[in-house]
Length: 447
Image (cartoon, rainbow, N blue to C red; front, side):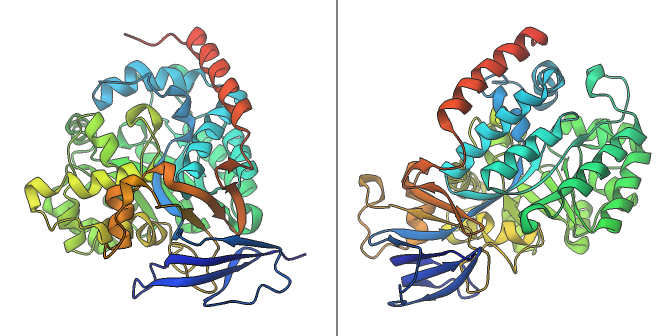
């Protein structure tokens, strides 16, 4: 039985090819946008939302998230990447159980939905990934997710996170076959090798083959930290991107988080192979990793989108925060016109859709596309005056997550005027505290 929602009298920021901003109505039928226009007929509509004075935007698409780490918020402050992983994150990930991972995911999803994000590219930990998929399924968020793969032995990787190559691959394929395409394609699978340092050549080559066989994304980290790059060169004799290309992973199915430290040849490979870069400015600043040269990437037609990364290296999952940082941090070096509001908003919406190969389905508000959107109330002290101001400037430079009133994904209202409908806030907060207490007893982290 179909259901319909009519959003009335809104300012609609479409992000279509012309980037039109329309004052009017938007009709949702089931999971898709049925019509956009003026004075649309409300006869027989199940729900009418009066959006007078409100702004409707495409749901944000974050292309690098770790739901498994949301429980660790505040546990990884003031460290650089490799120490952050070795001393805090890996020990805590190794301590996860099914229930703790479920509530870690729910905690993150609640925050994401509350701040207008409707699609994520998510990387879980080694074990219990099915629990995260269950949280994703229940919450209604659109997600491309996968279990992290770490089959290289030794070093500082805790024993529970050290996998056998064949087991890592088999478990990944099992999860893919269970979850890929779930709920009419709302949930998809991505092979998720952590990074070159933690994966064998054999595993990464097989991931390249399986990605092609199943036509699914590969989501990994690359060139985030100079110490990481030195280790990769010691191990492979090549720089990160050159190695990924050498083993067949550099394709338009590959999503690379960070890409801060690239040389010209690596940028060429990324551009020519159609690889997608996920820019994570909040995480990159907090871990002192550096600032990716995003203006040059965009100028040379490299596909760049945005992600908050994980809660312990940010410490929030708020796309408004990432947009504002992405716009501001590049201006001192590249000038005030670099990374203007529209280019950043593009990265947060249609750019994210392109990264996951879904630009025909999500990322803009157009008839026939999936109904993934957020309704903002910009009638606030911090967003006024509104007269003769570009609405996208107001969203990128002035708006905050608190301005999101309603979030809809796949045509389903997930947050209704500030009330969460699919994530039980009280239970999630209570269980999150219980879970982190349990994990810290199980695996005390290093000072």
